[in-house]
Length: 388
Image 1 (cartoon, rainbow, N blue to C red):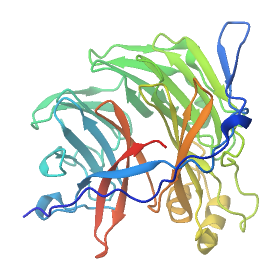
Image 2: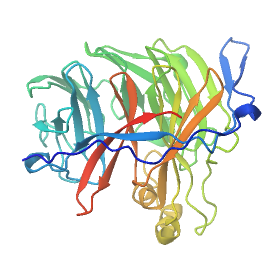
Image 3: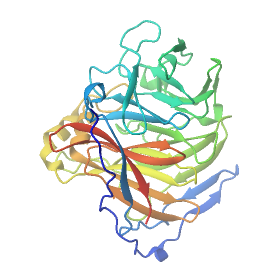
Image 4: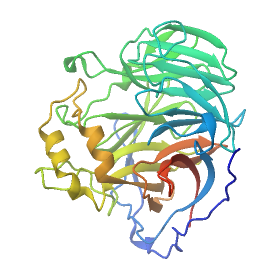
């Protein structure tokens, strides 16, 4: 029997009384090509402005098949059907679990294998919309499409193998970040791919990091601030470029707001862990949302892990292999939201959970975490975010 739960308003917000008068806002200029350059340096962080999070759904803490199976998960939501898609992050998962708006388990789609419609590993790169589930199968070499009733629709080889990440911009079109099989293959442009299997490189969308040898030179990709646009940023700096789907660079956001968590890598093993951007997103009002991993109070307990990844071997894209295992235990996720039109920092929230993700639902962005209850059972929790 499913356990009932109450909607709880967490006492995490206080009235926003911060003085934003010192903020110069976002300075907008244009380069010789007419590209808008948005300088964030003049934005002052409002440390007294706290975002309110309100629990909206619990997923995975129910009896039977709906039980949570990991301490982290990838999440998406289909506005047209009211279904959540969840991929639990563990060694056994190789399917997408569907839940309704209340968190009730519906069905699982896919299974582990190498055959048609089967997933090589947990399918973290997926999109759920209009009753259709699209999965980029690991390691980015093929696509699999299901209906949400579990019917396999199609599968095909990806003409651009080794895709690193993708964002679905419409039911028909996705944008890929494609990495080469060797570091010397970089940089690569963004690539457009459609459900009709047509592929087109966006020649103007080649993006490079200031320090290509940085172990944190890992790209982030998200839907842009306007329909049909895509945004690409970096984990170790606030530098975001937005492109149209035909490869035209539309604008560049750069510079750190005053008081923004400094994004820097540790120099010594005893230093705090680096503050890295975990995610970027734009809501439908064009506001910028950033998730930053900031040092947790317990970071010092993990110095051995930090020493390991500072001197550890690196993976094919330059990210230390032990980085993913070290950071969640030594950092706390912080959410910040910026109104770029008014040049304001709207507020922040630091979660007690190890990780926070963002998901668009009913036209609004929501935050989600995987948290442990008093019995140490994990559940995925979705929160509405409200502003002071």
